[in-house]
Image (tube, rainbow, N blue to C red; front, side):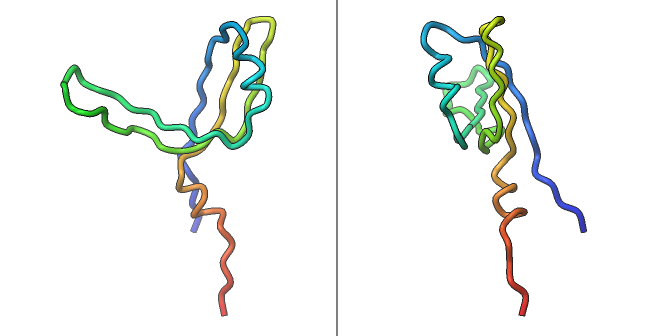
Amino acid sequence: IFAAADSFQAVLHLRGEDAALWADTDALPVRVTARNDAPDAPVTIFDGRVDDVEMDFAKRQVRLFGRDRTADLIERRITEK
């Protein structure tokens, strides 16, 4: 049986001193939410973590790569006795 977590990637445009923050970030939790013009609380679409960060200083962009929280369960080692 093969199992894999959902993945995502995003591009953020840097402002001011944001580059220093992203250059030193490791395993950052991520939650993507959306609201459909309703006064209710936003709905969570994706809950996961950033696994890798690529910086493009010339374009002042940071590209984030990550997976949802099921990756923690899939990668957890188990002992079968």
